[in-house]
Structure formats: structure tokens, C-alpha cells
Length: 614
Figure (cartoon, rainbow, N blue to C red):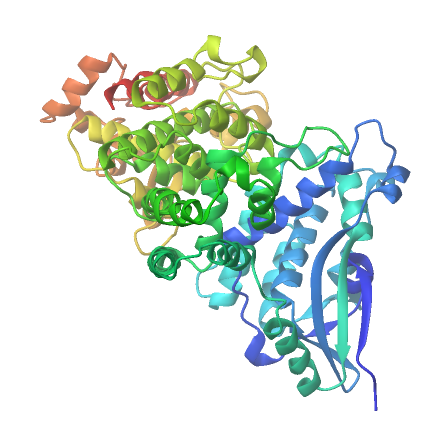
């Protein structure tokens, strides 16, 4: 009888083999949250060890990182994954993207990772995660193309979505000189345990045992146990239990991980006074530990938190947790559903800025009325939206790793502020005086804002500007509609006012590269419904202009009809001073004019003075 075998393996040694997955297990279900956590955990851990003065050989001395276990059933000489395929699929997508990033590197700088994704025989790729329905999609991704998800199975659609998430989430500062170091560490130092059984029954027994015998206790379970164990009165215990059940039920309605995320957010917002220093070898501090082991941190800091008696433990749940959890639930719902007054939360969430939640909870103080809580969260969310929009406009990263330190400093500085002080502080932080010169950005940029790389971000910017113009002109808000990206079902796409025909502009551009760069400037872009965008893509501007007259107001403003019988639009123009005008022709001069118009529109849309209205 074959023995169950457990081996520790690097990503390199584990993925350098073929795996199969039974048909009933083939769905890929990870969401943005899971991919974000994977990428951020890996990149944050790597940065603990990395030093710009290191050589590649120094990576061999970096610390290891444990990524979990994989349970495999060995049947008829083939390895079938019983548990761990979600994680391995996501790692495979990450490797495909990182291999794409290094395609232009010199050969001596590249890390050989393709064989961890696929092998080639007689010109045909054979993927190491051998799942027939995914192969076509993976083939496209591995070739540097992102396939259209229309008509694909839900699992394949999810693969494409998560690959796009990786593109957005992976830190920009790791994509160039640092990338070979990261790839060396990822493939050689990230470890998994491969547990191999020789029948499905044995494999599932292992899986059930690992999940049923105490190993599945989460930090939330352990914190709850700690609270309950320190409440002495039975009547108090009943009250605390009912509060806990009620709050966790509401959180679970939002998502299965929301209880943990809420507790992490609450504790960070109110108690994190230190964060790991941004240098190699620095130890985790409050902010870092509250993100991974808050149950242990609370036990070690019970006096600091105020847990001095049975009654304190009771109040910590029934008063503190209750107050901050309710605010968190309100914010999370606004992140999922466009909510009047809290639309900035939705914008920030679409840009994957999860750090907004601890910053929003930070100024809240127990005793704040519902209106004060709402206004404080509104102020912080709007502040964050302005901050993100400015960084996006300046091609600065807004990833978790790029923003975490600054977010922590903001969170700590506004903790428990009253409404007026909070407003003043946030406006100050958006001014020249409130930031170091290297950290201050606005919309007056030397490099023109344009479409560059993945177009999701600029799509959202265009959607926000379009909505701002329309709402200012008396129309209904439509941001969620405009951000829906699809060629069908009412989705929108970015429309270039210039078709991709440089030969039509030889009198204005000597080189096609200059034409392409100019064509991608935001002043030459609008949003159109997918079918309209597809049907117009090859036409000249003059041939497309009448179609623009039937579209959203930003596109329509190119046509004379926008200025007829629209008193509220005219009023908006007069009050804002913006130089909207119809454009019968659209050459380089007109694009420059339109670019300047969009800059001025962005300044109004994301003006710090908007915080004074709240």
C-alpha cells in the first residue's frame, strides 16, 4: 500500500509538473479580493528583504514565504488536484503576466518561468494545469493577448477578469529593474506543501481532517473566544452573544470574509500607531499585525485597548464593535451600490482602493450621531477620490503597496477629529503646504494625460467627468452605467475621436508614433456604447460627428446641437467658465483645446473646495 507523502516544495519545483483536475472541480471562482490579497502578500513580503544595493545572488539569502498546502490524488500515474487549484490557477495567471513584463528584458535578466506555465512539443503548448476548457484562454494570455470574454464559460470569464486584476494590482515599482529579483524570490523562496495520496478517498480524508480538527479556526474565531471567555456574568454573555450574532449576520450578507475585514479595519483605524518601516528587515508593527493576527495583538495590548474588566470586554463588543461595524457596513454597501452622498466610496472601490475603509473609520468617535458619521465618511471618501484622481492623472500608482504608508499617516493624523477640524485638515492635505513637494500632484502636468496600457483606469476617469458635466447641467447621475465595460448589454467603450489612420494626418505629424501618442490623449477621447464605438471606429471625425450628437453630454458637446435648447448646460458653462464649443473639424489644434478643457473640467470635478459643501 502506498504511503501518504508530504513534501515542501518551491513554486518552481511544484509547478514544473503536470496536474489534472476532475470535471466537477474545474470552476475557477476566486474574486478580485482574493487575487489582491495574494499579490499584496507576496509583494509586501518580498519588500521586507529587498534592498536596491543587492545583487541577484543575494536573493538566495532572502527569507521564505509559506503559501499553503496542495492536496493531490495520484491516479493512474496522473496527479489530480483535490485542494489548492484556486491558488495554483491564480499563481499561474501571475506568472503569465510577469513573463509578459520581462519579454523586452535582455536574456541575462530574464527568469525562466514559462516552463512553470506550459511546455511545448511539436509547436503545441501543453499547460501544466491541464484543463481543456481553459487552454484556449491561457494560450491567448501566454501570447500577450487578452481575449474577449463574451460567449465564454463563467470560469474562463473569471480567468480573464482576474488576469486584468493582476495587471491593475501588481505594483508598478516592481515591473522594471526589481522584477528579476522578485521572480527569483517568487520561484525559489515561496514554498508550498504538496500532500500526495494515492486515491481520492484518502485525499478527501486528508482535506476534511485539515478543515475539521481545529486548523480552520480563524483570527475572528479566536478573538471571539477571547472576548467571551473574559465576560463573567451570564446575562452579559447573552447580550454580547446577541450583538455579535446580529453584526456578523449583516456582515456575512455582504461577503463571507467581511467579518474578518471589518474587525481588521476597525482595529487599524482606532489603534494602529505604528507601521513597519520602509526598509529591508524592518519588523511588523501595529498596522501590519492587525492585518494578519489581530486576535494576538488584542491579547497583547489589552490594557492599551481598555480591556481591564469583564464589563470592559462586554462594552468593547456591544458599544465599540457595534458602532464601528455599523459604519463599516454602511461604507461597504456604498462601495457596492452607488449611494447618494457617498458616491466617492463607489469610485474608490472601483479603483480597488481598499485602504479607504480604515481611513474613513478613523475620525469616527463613539457618540457621533448618524448624520455626523455620514458626513465624516463623505468627507474622507471625497478626499481620497481627489487624491486618487490626481495620482492617476500623473501616472502615479495607486496600488496598496504604493499607498499603504501614506494612507496610514493620514489615518493616524485624523483619528477622532471633529467635523470642522477634519474638513480643514483634509483640505490642507490637498494643498501645496499639506504635502512634501515630491508628493503633491494636481492636474497641471508636464506630460499630457492619455490612454496608456490598461484602459480601465482612464475609462473610469472619463465616466466621472462625463457624469460631473451632466449632473452640473441638470441631468441624472449615470456613473455606474458609464463604467460598465462591454460591447453588449449597455456597456461602454473608449472612443477615439481620431480613427487609427496616421496617413490622414501627415500634414500634422511626421511620424506615426507621434500621431499615436497624440491620439491617445484624454482630450481626444469620449465614451460611447459598445456597438456604436465598434461601428464608428474606422470613420473620419466629420463622418462620426452626427452620431456624437445623440450620445452623452461630453460627446455631444462636440456638436452644435448640444448648445440648442439646453439652458442648464449653458448655465453650467457660464458659471464654470469652461470653454465648451462645437467643433466642426478636429485636428491637432482642436485636440489641444479639448485637452485643456478636460484639465479644467477635472479641476472642478475634483476640487478640494468641494469638501466645503459637505
